[in-house]
Length: 272
Image (cartoon, rainbow, N blue to C red; front, top):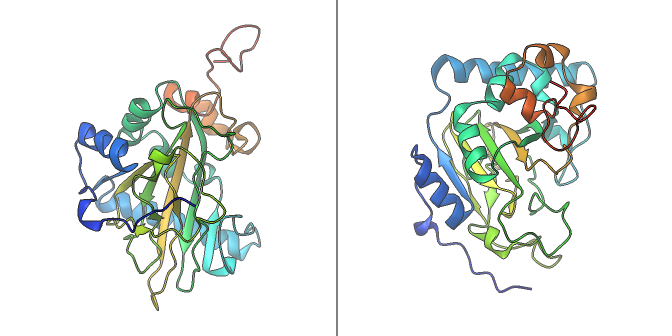
C-alpha cells in the first residue's frame, strides 16, 4: 500500500472561471470547479426536470439497481440513466461551452460522450467505493494523460454533509487504479454551490460521499467524455431519443459517434 497522507485542505484550488487556471488546476490537483455556470431560471428548470425524471422512474417501477460502485440501499441513492433522452435541457449540458472547452483542452477533438447520468443522494445515502474512472484500461495506463473527463453539474449545493463527491487530491498523478488495500484512503469533499461545473479527470480517485444530513438532498448530473477509441458506456444507437440525432448539432453528433473520423465509417465515409 502506498503511504498516502491526509489531503492538505489549505492547498486546494479556489473555484475559477478562467480556463487556463482551470487547466492548471486539473494538471496539479486532478480537478477544478467552475462557479455560476447554471444560474437563475436555467438552474431551476434543470433541477425540476431532473427531479421529475427521478420521480417518474420510481412511480413507474423503472428504477435501475444501484450502480456497482454505490454502497447501501439504492432507495437513498438513486441513479437516473441516459438523462440525455429525458429532457432537452440535458442536451444543453452535453454541449455547454464550458464543458466543451475543457473537453477540447484535455482530450482533444473529436471526443465521445460515454454517458450522462444523474445521482440523487438523499439523507441516509451511504456513499460509494473509492475508484478511478479509467479502470477499463489495463495497467500501466498511458503516460500521455487522462483518457476521459468528467463534467459534474451541481444541481443542488454539494457539501461535505450532504453527499458531495469526495476525492483524493492529486491522486491522478499515481496514474493507476485504487489498490485493494487503499479503499480507506483519506478523502476530501468537492464542495460547490448549485450551478457549478465540477471538472475532474478520469485518473482521479473519487467516490460518492455519504449524506449524513436529516433532510438535505444532493443531486448531480455527471457527463463522462472520452477519447474516441473508448467504447461508450451508453449505447446511443439504441437508447437515444430519435429527434436528438435528427436535429443535433455537429458537436452533438460527433460526441454521440454519429459523425466519425477513422472509426465507425460507412463505406469509408462519416455517416453524416
